[in-house]
Amino acid sequence: MTIRVRFAPSPTGYLHIGAARTALFNWLYARKLRAAGRDAEFLLRIEDTDLQRSTEESTRSIFEGLDWLGLDYDRERVVFQSDNADKHRAAALSLIEAGKAYRDFTPKAERADSNIKQEIAARARHASAEGTNHRANPFRDLPLEESDRRAAAGEPFAVRLKVAPAGRSRFEDAVYGEQARDYSEIEDLVLLRSDGHPLYNLSVVCDDIEMKITDVIRGQDHLTNTHKQILIYEALGAPIPRFAHLPLILAPGGKKLSKRVHGEIVSLTTYRDAGFVAAAFRNYLALLGWSTTGVPSPAHVTTGNSEVQGDERVGELMTLGEMVDNFSLDRIHRNPAIFNFDSNNPKRWTDDKAVWMNAEYIRSFLLFDELRPLVKAELRANKLWREEYDEDESGWFEKTVELIRQRFYTLKDFSGQGRAYFSDDFDFDEAAVRKNLLKEPRLKELLPALAERLEKVEPFDAVKTEEALREFAEEQNVKAGLLINASRTMLTGQSVGPSMFEVFDVIGRERSAQRLRSELPWADAAP
RNA sequence: GGCCCGUUCGUCUAGGGGUUAGGACGUAGCCCUCUCAAGGCUAAAACACGAGUUCAAUUCUCGUACGGGCUACCA
Image (cartoon, rainbow, N blue to C red):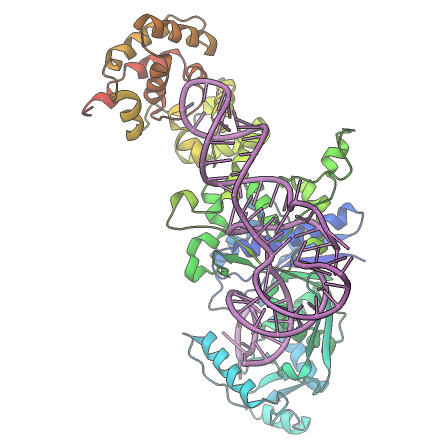
């Protein structure tokens, strides 16, 4: 039998990082099965039944987000839920015929959209205090003929599922274990609105049946509603899929991560636009609510390293392949994970570990195959890219990227901190100028002299420039560090960076000399 | 309010009746050093609380507190 899982986001707003993680886990689940020789598919369904809130832009951001994360799905088979509304409606109507649902002619209660959550909660409080009988609807046992007659006369009605008065719904959740809920706690849920619009629970079930979904992996916010959906599966006489609910991702303080209060921090595109490498962010997301302890790393096994012990842990840094190999639903937690960020602190704008992982990926990516295209895109977006980097300056380009990637955290750094390597038009960091240039007035004469000395160095490489600079420092009776740090600021505008002699090497003889003679930072600055 | 779920360093987590409660990120210190990273070493840092079971509970059970989810003619 083919195992089918699906990712079913609603296109309202951007792709939420929690949703992205749900997609990842579904994808991993399918891939894992496929690696084991089973038939498994990962499908995408856009739940665009809320016409007011669904946007095409949001649908696009879902596609883009999945592409960015490398989660591939069958494009030909993407389902738009709104296309199936007629089928959902027909299913509800068939349930009336079968006596498993009924028409409710009660006029629709109008609700204020503003604080609807509180209103619902308040209503529920009252209901529970007074002890509501969910089977008290006067239309529940209306004879079918009369119901048909009133409907035929044009009287508006909603369709409700006829939930049995007594009994208990049960299912085994792959993550949360045995789940049970009394029928008495479940209302006769509305399947079809009085305007004929099918509701979420009905649509999901109908589409999952039609798509032959065997395993539903989704957020924990759907855990309790699963009982209602099972009731619909049963009424429709369809097989019930396996369910697995994922713990939610929370904001610092344990609050729900929401667009309204947390803004763009919940959007996947924010991370892409901030210079995250997809592989790194994907890796970080995978570790929120899931861990791999104790599973030997196949990567180690295939290297044939006999030193590796059997109980060796898989590191937290995993390739997609390793993630697939190690993935298992039963290692998913039941407790929610907190995603750290601080919008008031630029240094801590997002989770430290995510940033660290990104730096790890930037450092360890294959220079040519993996990192180069990303740096190219970043430079291009900032008008720093030159076609020569792909042609006769290709060697220089890679050498430079290799040098500067070592201390970069995001792709943005290549066009930011790294700007001086690709352009003569770069800014000087004020603190760096003060610390490395203005403190020593002699530098104004020393640096041009150093430039003159370096111009004669042959070959102009890290070893020879170091010899020349140290010799010059000794002659002038100054510390080498003074000249090194001053040079760093003159050449890159900064006080931090790679080994200065490597910098001389990649910046080159002419540009180095020219920048050492530059008047720029001295101009109007007072010591 | 009702129902459901959860709670191990600041965060992500390992573990599980007897452990010096392990790792990672972050933080601090030291080494290295031309700066900053990286790397190496070290440190501070956790079993929410109360009962019960047991020779023994962080681990099992119950309760409390706290947090989360659901409770719509939203998705």
